[in-house]
Every structure is written in C-alpha cells, then in structure tokens.
Amino acid sequence: MMAKLVSSLSAQWQGLGAPRRVCLQLSGWLLLAVLTWLWLWQPGQQRMRLAEQALSRELALGRQLLQVTGVPSLGAGQVLTPARLSEGATAAGLQIIDLHTREGRIEASLQGAPDALLQWLHGLEQGGARFTSLQLQARDRQLHVRLGLSLDPG
Image (cartoon, rainbow, N blue to C red; front, side):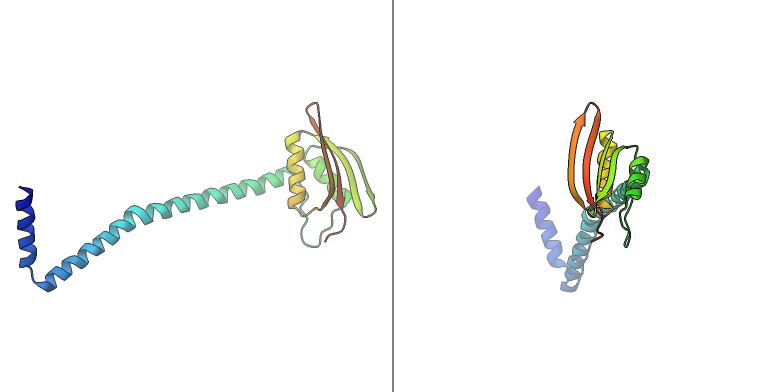
C-alpha cells in the first residue's frame, strides 16, 4: 500500500512541468523557514526579553537597596570624610565605637547586625571607597569591624 502511494506521488510529481516543480520547491523551503522562525527563533527571543526584564528588575532592586541602607555614594569629585562615613553608618543602623583620622586615613570601629554591616561595607566599596585595612570579628549576634579607609580620592 505504501509503495503504491509513493509511486503514485512520484508519477504526479514527474507529470508537473519544470517551472511548477521549482515553484513548489521554493514554496516548501519558504514554509520550512517560516515554521523554523515560529518554533525556534521567536520563543528564544521571548525568553531573552523575559530575562532582560528580570535583569532590569534586579538592578532596580539593587539600587533601591543601596538607597535604603544609607550608604554614602561617592560621585566624581566627592571625597570620603569622617562625617559622611558616620552619617552612612548611622543610617544603616550601625553603632560607631571609634572614628578618627590619621595620616590621610580614616580609622573606624563599628558594630551591628551582620547583614546590615556587610551591606554597608559593600556599598562603601561600590561607592568608590578605598580600604587600606579591614578586620571582621563575630561576637554574640553582632559583627564588629575595624577598618581603614584612604582619604585620597585617587
């Protein structure tokens, strides 16, 4: 039965004129290209758009988190000062134990909740602060940090 069907289709194909066969072949390739685009390319593009949207949401949340933690952001031409460091630490809910300047550096001791302290330190680094020293120590449920920061902007 299958052989009969194949021979019948083959005979009909051979009975078509050459221009009509070329037209049908081109139509078949065009149909294949359209179906490939619909089944492969388009879903891939949709997944990429969804990933881009998720990335932009994550970046917006990251910016919002930095604003909430009160990390001093150092823009171009801004210099880190003890007052800015103190304001940022207080806004992040940290307790300042010691804060002073010495030989072009800020030396500070702080304590607070581990998450808040680590986010604050990360924000300082992302804001352009240059650490000269950093010591972390866990006591009870608090994290204590001794740090040195360079006052030089470059």
